[in-house]
Length: 340
Image (cartoon, rainbow, N blue to C red; front, side, top):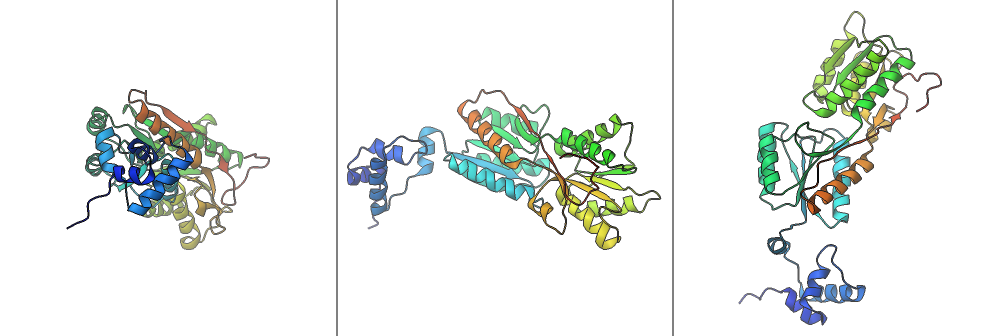
């Protein structure tokens, strides 16, 4: 005959405590003395007991599971951010489910529907957009959603981003102060708020000085599209002497093309500035000047927001923007007297 399943009551009897004490020990955030915790965990180990998380979720209505949805990991920023989000949520006693979604509305909706089947407490999306229908279904189910590094006007969802518009403006001011005459922009995908906001800030910064870019090309957050855009720009009769690129992933493609394929010097012939300041940006091979996404502060704000919305489902949505400092390295001409 199969052995009977060990229950929390068995653990309570072995440890000499109440069944509710066992429940508190295995409930994240539960209150129990160190002596009780030690006795219960020792008894559980001796008996081979494992708490049934799904059963507890059915009783309490809380699974303590957060779903993380991301569209692509090519950009170094996202693996780093997802690792820190996962660690921060686990420190709060939450389990994390990571789902990869294709970068399309239909694909995202399909993945999100699968995620809802896991009786999750909340959802964090990174680099994906939400359809209005799916947003309403999550809202009706009482499942809060926080968008990380992406905003969506009119969605009623909380979002946490860097100050993308201000960052773009800052790069424009930096190039102008360095005396650049022909300034171009290879933007991030214009279907994403990050790509649009960085571009708009950059153009506003140039316009404030009475200047216009020589060209703006959508790099789609894609390496091959960015390489083609770089070739296009540099083949023109008056090629740019400075390029602001929508993120570091694309900026690396620009630098590779300029140096290895076209034989140009960075920054002597062309200054290049990116956005994100991923670890690779600091490597000597790139030494990329970049706007630093404040990932730790963004993660902290995202976790605080999702937990607050889980605790209070009627909490109003918030739009949080955190300043992104310009980290100056060797890929761009530095204006005389410029202070970072």
